[in-house]
Length: 431
Ligand code: ATP
Ligand code: MG
Image 1 (cartoon, rainbow, N blue to C red):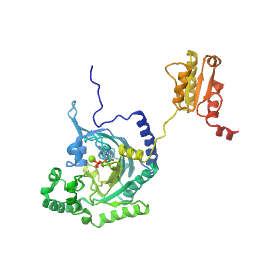
Image 2: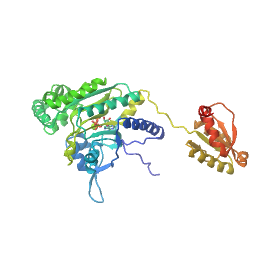
Image 3: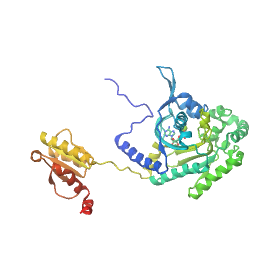
């Protein structure tokens, strides 16, 4: 016997009950994004590898060790399954000249991302993000709006224990000055750095600050702070963001070690973290990335955005008691006999035409066994058709979830009878 095939490690099937939860949640998310004026954009899952190298930076976890990159066997192109969406979104905006023609753009996307990481709770190789990008906006007002809208979603979802951390990465020039000081400081502690730290000391020392290695905490805690290198403009921008946050009553903590894993950020960066999910506590991360358009060969454009990790958000939502409403059919059609089943199909299509969700019993069986299925479907009403009804061109309407006797109605009056049964108040109003 051949071995059964399994999904790729870290890439999950989302089975029907979970998938229903996802869809329920996606509806909430779409309404939320629309309420802030964000419009959808959909980019390919595969992009040229140089896009991510240029956007994210060569010396980052993602580019160094997490990308699914391959050579197209047919034409030798270097391709990568997208590890994140911002690079693609900005690539698309440049390629289609979205901003000069349309003014600034508020965009969002939703979908799978791929990173070769060690799978564990809240960390997968295929995971999903909602990405929100405000392209062409320079001000602190936009940074604040992005943070505020996250807070609104957490509130809509009833999340608890989510805290906001913010920081400013300043301008590239300010970062360069801080970088020199940081390298000088870390060189003094070189022997105590771990392997990653030693390797990054001269390539990406900022990233040493967000190390998860507990043995390095004391060293990074005492390291020179970027905040002390910010110029007036960066400071004013950061202050303005904080004024908006205070106005909105959103508590936050300035985390001087929040530097984000990607190279493209400047000025405001933020993360929303929870203590409820163990080590994988960041449910949302983002910031400003004014240099990215130019870095990808476009005309300079200011921009800011964030990405939410959906698996983590759903885990937290469920931990906070969140539950999806499951879709339930309005009607279950039960029929015995060929003529009855044919009438059943007609009844089902007629009802669907009028907006009812109908589950048609397929696969035959006795009335009794079909009625059991009808009950299990949670449909409030069953349509019951036997030979008698079929011969008369009528169907039986049987309430399953509320009181009332079964009634027989001609097929032509089915929609009205169904409406009267399902929405009795509205009937009263019309009279
Ligand atoms: P981490 O530090 O946890 O690796 P990150 O900084 O690499 O996160 P981002 O690139 O900022 O993550 O992605 C934004 C969000 O996407 C994260 O805050 C997280 O919620 C989610 N995310 C990132 N990587 C994964 C993954 N491998 N599995 C599940 N969710 C992820
Ligand atoms: Mg990561």
